Image 1 (cartoon, rainbow, N blue to C red):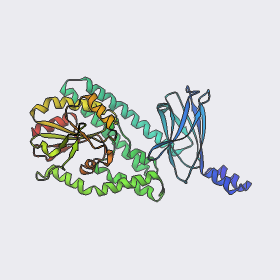
Image 2: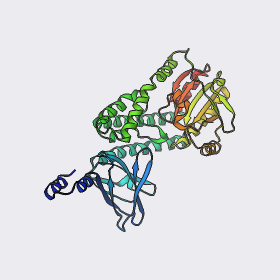
Image 3: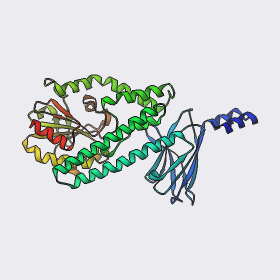
Length: 383
């Protein structure tokens, strides 16, 4: 709460109700130049995105909202115009002011909210990397030269590594802010999360420990703590999978799932072939491009004994069926429509999608999360 509001409460002896309301609210106002007359929506981000208010922008693009807090803790909010949005991290008592041009996501500035400024800085850095990687993927799709494709793949990997290092620094410095949670769950082109490997457990644990006592009732903190617990509970599975990478006696977990026609496919029936177990979703960005890349690999190596067992983590049968038919996917495509609750997710310790494992002819795991030239080299090694 600002010193001005506190002094006014003391000097004027405002009622407890008035004092409580000022303490538990925030003003969010600003000006979106060039968008006069359009509707701006105020959304609260929790498990879902919930529209809590809306307003018609003035002719000059001006707007103003008052947000009332149910608890004295920061909240994630979106300001959305059409499909463009700005994410804020707002605390009780703040007076947040924004200004932006017509493309609000790429041009806005924010004052009066430290958390929102952290989110702006985080998203600005990631947006730059997103654009660079997306451009490299587009270039990859246009070239047919294998050496050039390999070089592009290496450049993409470098961009991912650099962005992850940036996010690690952000998380460590801001571990006591909910902004660190946003950094932990950011995604880049092709839907891959920046964090999510077993080695990232310490960063999740650091933020969870820093925020658990500070914001014990926050839905975001509780969700983070649950994910940390899942990391711990999956240790046995991770160890089993890790052992299978070095121990020829450790087989891959069995999968028995159905395709769109209701035909059952057992993963173990593919022994004798080098198999890619691939997890995906039609909703993930750039997934179509990754499937196209995989189709090129499949066309070359399928006649030599390579197979793909691709598991959709979608819940909508129609969306999945449409995607499989539209993309003309030639391999085994299966789905149980349970999304992240699919037993296959737990069996293979899937922490983000896209995600894959490569199995040798004996059905044992010999590689994890391989793409492009790395995948083709591994296939050739075991064919």
